Image 1 (cartoon, rainbow, N blue to C red):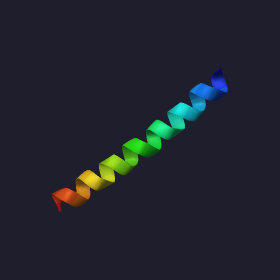
Image 2: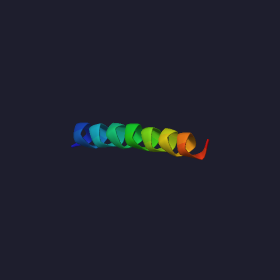
Image 3: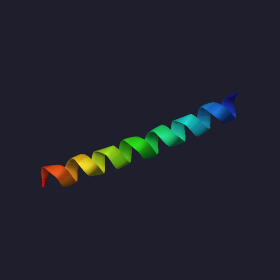
Length: 28
């Protein structure tokens, strides 16, 4: 269970960072 949660957390963090970079690019 903990391993699954860790995987999801990692994926979410990557997705958030990617989305944030796209937002900053669009702003510029």
